[in-house]
Amino acid sequence: MFGSQGERKLQVAWGTEDRANRFYDRQVQDHLTDKMQVLIRRQEMFFVGTADSKGNCDCSPRFGATGFVEILNARQLAYPEFRGNGVFASLGNIKENPHAGLVFVDFLDTTVGLHVNGTAQIFLPNEAPAELAFKEYRRKNEELLLECWVVIDVDEAYIHCSKHVPRLEKQAKNIFWGTDDPQAKSEDYFQE
Image (cartoon, rainbow, N blue to C red; front, side):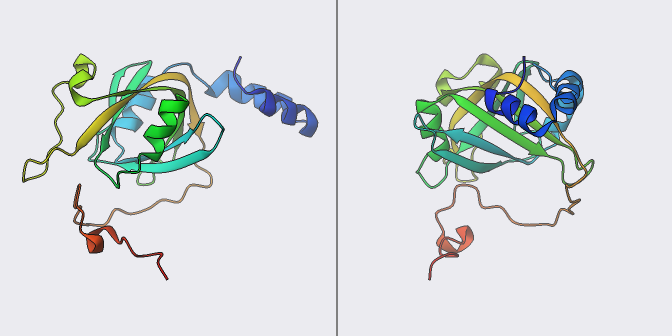
């Protein structure tokens, strides 16, 4: 049965049980359907939500070239963790609590979103599943960008309807993967 105890209690309290049950019955899958896989493969970004063992949350975006999220099979996907600021907020949470929620939003075409919730495992590049062994992410100077792979075992996947999602237009931008240049990173943007 889909839905947390908290969801179910609020549905009863607010009288939305029938509507929620229609959603669970029609929309929630325990795997990635073919259409879900197509949507994921078209994305250049998604958001990952994690929490540590005490429930402290983090939600962070992940970016890459179209198709950077790998579909291993209908019940597993993997994404690369590229070199970042060295904090490892999401990965640290996954070490303590493997539950993760991913949200993909197709801002450019359908304006449909996709929630994928499941259990995450961290793999160093040389320990990754065989399907990922051929994937290499390097800068022009050959410095390795890939920190690790995160493999998600899918528990549930479901739509985020398009009615409130804005349609955006992609603009050209130079991306400086793995740079430590403070200006390229807008490092001091929020500093006063």
